[in-house]
Amino acid sequence: MVKLKDLAESTGYSINTVSRALRGDTRISAAARALITEKAHEMGYIPNMVAGSMRSNRSHTIGVVSADSANPFFAEVIVGIEEAARKQNYSILLINTEEQTENERAAVKLLLGRKVDGLLGFPSLSGGKQPSVFHSLKIPFLLVGRYLPGLEDHSILHGDAEGQRQVFEDLLDRGHRKILYLAGPDFISNTHDRIKGLEDAYRSRDLKWDESYTITTSGHIEDGYAQINQALHRGIDFTAVACFNDLLAMGVLKSLYENGRNVPGDTEVFGYDNLYMSQFMQPRLSTVDVPKNILGKTALEELVLHIEDPERKYETVNLKPRLIYRETTVQKKIDPEAKGS
Image (cartoon, rainbow, N blue to C red; front, top):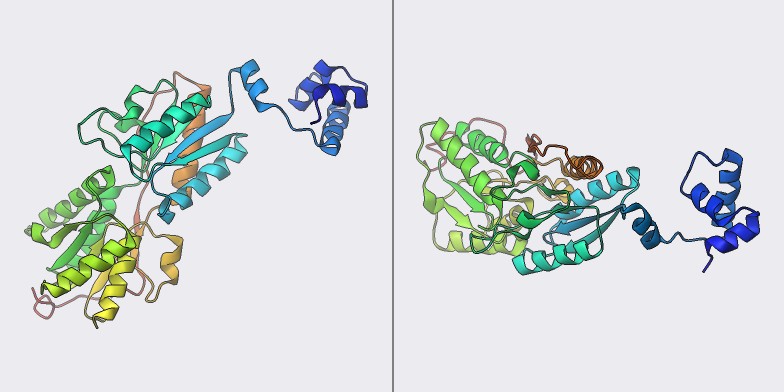
């Protein structure tokens, strides 16, 4: 392995000068910096980041505690995190928890042991059994797309209640009255906020929400498929299906197709998240756009500001959702009588 001593001997500069030049110290002449940098590249020099972090008390590394490796939503957000990290000269260490609280605790402990400068997390609610590991953190951290009670000001959110309210307002205003809602799991904040959006839509139109039309799910494709199969088997009458996420909607569409239900003629379907793949489905999925790349970039950029200024005040950031109309919904007024009101 090439060391600073080898570069010093090759360039004729002292080890101290070589080290400072590689760190971009402007007190070293531009010509010397260019020569040393070129020689380092030529010889395959790899900087010792551990030693550098010990000197500066900074690792220039951010830990990312993701939630579900099978869900492409998180992958799209993490792309934004990585892009912003590169621009800020930070690296990331990523660990998936598979939505398990014990995995979340182990991940945070491991990342703290790696001396990360800050943390980004997609936390699960602990259900009141014990405080989340994020409540005791001593380093800068932000929660991405979710919140925890008492730590709402640490969150970068994306308007869950507003987005779901818009979906139900659209369906209700076009005449639907029997809307099946496939909700997400109870242990994440998004589920509760989106149900609040549903309730707000019904309340604003002086309509009663039938709770029997809400089904709690895992949020995975196979659950969407199974739940619609069961609903049809039980003879539940519905004219539209609103889904907690696009993954559920994919399973819903497969079930409806196999059961001879035309989409959107017999049943309209709305997803949530606007995953990249949703525009390539057949039919193409109507959904709520969550600005995932911007969410990741905003979280990383804001976290770096907190790392550089430990006194910076934490404030909730709420990005705006918007409806994306594609082929699983129709854009015309529906006769409630004709849709089984």
